[in-house]
Length: 316
Image (tube, rainbow, N blue to C red; front, side):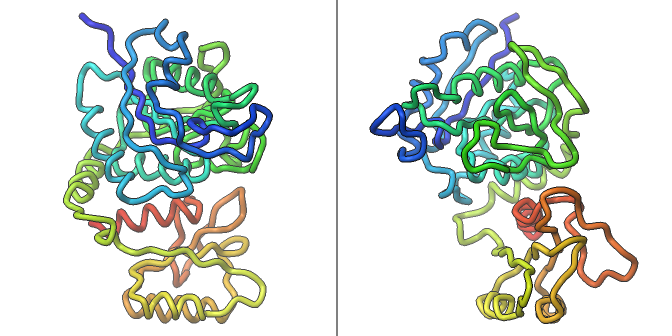
């Protein structure tokens, strides 16, 4: 019996970036190095078993689009159905990694591991962090019993539900809030702290079918994020409603609190058929529901992930 393989999908990002000088870790252009070259520069990858690569996209993740998400979801779904595929690694930019991670978990809900990894320094850096992150990601994808979508950065494994980018520059740029990481990768071995994400295959099949039926980016339901802050008004909500927005996620203060003017506009939009969800702008914790809440909460999702969940919900 042939050993199972790991498939590495390249989408660009800082990990594939280049700068004019090896000392420049911020003035680079992302998505310059192909996935084949990135993998060729990490010969240790071949030691644990077969690895194949595919260049699915080549973008700076700040420009992540519904078109690339559609490609990713459909290709990940296809690969997961192949018995010879043990797991998938996706190289991704750091800026929107947490959104893509949650999108793939919600859309594909994989029973096999789908591991997103990244870099904070470009490939041209004097000491790039990308190669070690890829090695660690493949170690996670090869781990017996691994499942679900996770992110691996700086030796730490984060679940798709909890991962957030928490630093603009440091190599250890991601955190999992008060939930904590799933575990760590230490010299190619995993030290787990909690369980893997659970798969929900029935929901995933429905989501993938809906995504496959989408014709172009304009077919995705429009969901926007608004924020609560001192002196907030309902002007943004009213403007978005006039443009035909279908859903609104509000990044509230504290435990779901809203300025009275913004809350009034959101309730009016909700009464008119716009789906409204409350998340919190706090880094840790989640909105705890109270009896009689007029606007539902995000079930612990951050504002950007609540937006993804609401879009998928509106698709169905």
